[in-house]
Image (cartoon, rainbow, N blue to C red; front, side, top):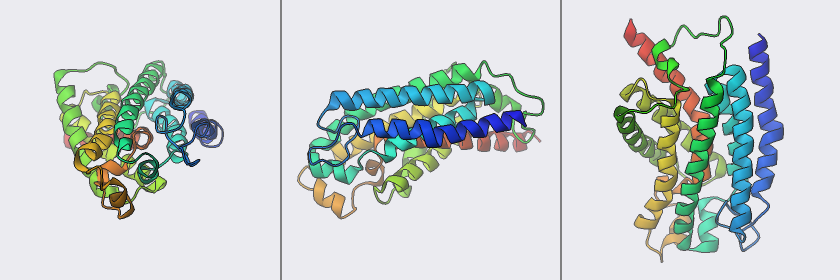
Length: 283
């Protein structure tokens, strides 16, 4: 009962306090036309990157606290709520292309590298904090595989884990391509979140001992691959018209911050689903 109360208090704190602070930080810099920018695609990239780092630290702190008190899954969820605010307060793909043209793709690739690094760092902090968590009596979920759950907070990778990341990234990219229809902020974050569920399930089914960080790593790969696809597939003289006509590749509509927020929100659900699948297979 106490554990549940702490978990929900931290969810609310992430939603109404920490998240808005991180979201406001993302608006300290803007695009050249005065609209919202992103961490790198703005008039002051240094300030934007600083805002990204501050928001990531806030997400890691609240996520780490939740992981320490309640386990890795609530920790990831709390951090995801914070990053969801950051992504929601940032520009979408069409807005970025409107201001920066074809150069937007290269800028977003650079941002993808930075966001992927922040995502992995957040995951490491949460995993380390989760290792300090002492499960309360009755906290064990009998409907899920103990073996699958036992390595979620691990930081140990194997060659099989690497294969799981590659396969999961491909599966998540395919799912996101279908799900991302427009670049409306809620729609693309939701698409990334659902894709992250698929990523976590595939990671665990390919390598049962893979840590939760493997799923975040696969999402980090897609945070770089999504704008890279736009850079490769969309001709420079057609980028703006394709954006307004909503004919950009679905995967390219998802920005790096969308992927980070979606990964943290979706991974806990994917881990739970995979553990349930494995548990049923054990019988």
